[in-house]
Length: 265
Image (tube, rainbow, N blue to C red; front, side, top):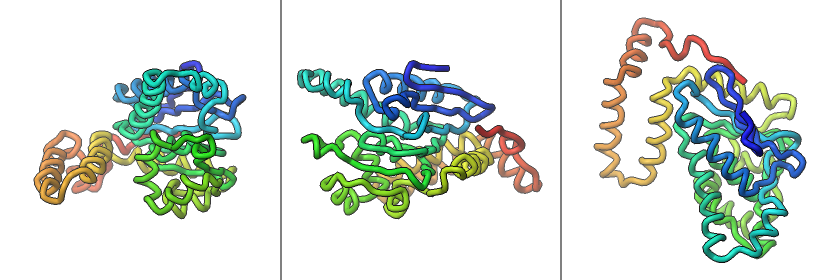
């Protein structure tokens, strides 16, 4: 299904979301934000989808803000700017909070907001020639909407350096800082992503969704709050149909139903 600027395809339990504006290096505009929100809302509600691969068409992952979009933004009122920025923030949160694991296939440069999309993924695998940058301060702006996700991945020390200098950094440096999980040759990118997909498909769908929620919740709670919360989470999963099936399959040295098949992109 094509949503104008985003291509959503599905093969078995795997959905593939492709930023589809290669003529402008998959740069964002307001339409792409809406299309991404729609695609991930559809994925969220589709029980057959178990993992998502997010990538860019052509040689770039995402070049950040589109020039024509920026020309319109210059004329916006505060209220229009707020609504526009809120749309970007909501899109990033939709990716980050997607109940299905999201693997970023970083096939080329990711600049500005594109780097924020990388950070919102659960796992990011980058081609070794991919480059990254936060160029907002050079325009008199700041990477506000993407900052919560980048801070979680890269930490304050690294953001202070790269937010303030705006300098580009390599995929290898991105891996050192935690922005991406792995760096591979361009010809190895699909195989590396497929390997992650296969591993994820061995996990129970409910358990994967709860694990993503658990990571978010634990980080936002105190140690005292986490004691009963974590006990409640595991108790509920143990008693669920999926948990019962998984534990019994393990004890019987068999595979649970969700791990017996599954297609990859």
